Amino acid sequence: MSAAHLLRHSRKLRSLQNAVGCENLSLVRHYSSGSGSFIAKENGVGKRTRGTRFSQHNQPAKEPETFSLGVNGSCTWRRTSNSLTPSAASWLNGSLSCGQVVSARPFSSSADLPPHQEIGMPSLSPTMTEGNIAKWLKKEGDKVSPGEVLCEVETDKATVEMECMEEGYLAKIIQGDGAKEIKVGEVIAITVEEEGDIEKFKDYKPSSSAEPVAPAESKAQPEPSQPKVDEKKLTQAPDAKALKIEEASQSGDRIFASPLARKLAEDNNVPLSSVKGTGPDGRILKADIEDYLAKGGTREAFAAPGLGYIDIPNAQIRKVTANRLLTSKQTIPHYYLTVDARVDKLVKLRGELNPLQDASGGKKISINDLVIKAAALALRKVPQCNSSWMNDFIRQYHNVNINVAVQTEHGLFVPVIRDADKKGLGTIAEEVKQLAQKARDNSLKPADYEGGTFTVSNLGGPFGIKQFCAIINPPQSAILAIGSAEKRVIPGSADGQYEFGSFMSATLSCDHRVIDGAIGAEFLKAFKGYMENPTSMLL
Image 1 (cartoon, rainbow, N blue to C red):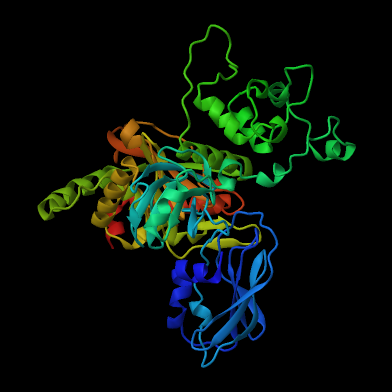
Image 2 (cartoon, rainbow, N blue to C red; image 1 turned 180 degrees about the vertical axis):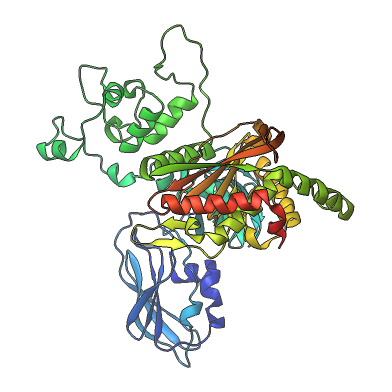
């Protein structure tokens, strides 16, 4: 790529004349296969800005080429076959601010690939490692601007809109609608600066999208038929299932497959002997397994003969919920405390407040809203329960943010009511209903469920469950499980007299690393006090 071509196609370099001052700054652009960033040098110290990985292109060696670029001064550059480096630079009157050095643009050194940007799967939540494409809101060829929504991404907790960061044109969609289990950072689309460059990416396939662990497959050398002794020592003994899948079907020969392909085959019960590899020397790649499954390839059934069944694919939220709860039960020492609170006064107070809510146009207050408020105030009294285990220390939170468990057809969501101890019952009722509806619509944003310090799960009102023990939601240290209210016969004020009372069971699941038994009991005592004397919550 000539210097003139570089300057003509890069808005970034064309706009350098608008940059502001910084002493002794030189700008380096690399075209090596492992580099995709600017290096800014100030006073001899190099600083690397954000870049994007480039594809490697084999090119014949060329004689060094120099050209000059003036931005309120002059700079001489020398280009070799693999990189573009400055041979001399002097910036008069200062020409670039260190804070204004722009991000790198992934230019291709191949003549048939104009300047372009690879858009990777973003990390949209702290626990996200992979995501799914729900649907694209832009199509190939559309012009995109900063702030416009490109697509909807299904994360481990919700469906989130992905916005465009730079102006350009959507040249190629690599992962289409419904694409599943895309690793964070894996390329999902290509954008270009010029509309005329769109057609050149019609058949474009990034080298990293087909096989993320490409370095293991870059060599066409076949592996030895007998594994080395050192490799045997480093690898674990495979289980029976893995041995069954990797078993060769032709004359006892070993089947060559990438680690990712073996993992995908194992997860889907696909025998490798049934898949034809398209990699070097017939090596089976991840794409080969995906093609096999897409064409209706059969999976080995591990069900007993004669049983009728259906395999239901797990949604992303289901997988994450399963992994997090399994980790919670395996790593957190749970213990449980249960208390029964008489709620006659609570029910009476709710009956008095709801007509006032109706008159003012507010949402009706539910028993669960009162439970959330009572739990928040109890946490303020006993802040040790509003904490997290951090290995070397216990983190005690100043904010009381209550997560509320909401079951939907998409899975279990836990939207958060922030600073619940400081909010009125009407505000809590409004927020709970809004967040519950967003959860059912699968439209929660990360801000709607992140940052909780304590969780309330209520199976009593909706389902009539009398009492249950909930699993702690990491990194929190406790969760409160609420059962249904039931009428009981209790002794009256005089001998021989009896009366009816409504009682509700509440079970606190505690992390014993953080909350000792007496502390958990103190919390339930405070919670019971607010439930049995609800007017104290209004003070």
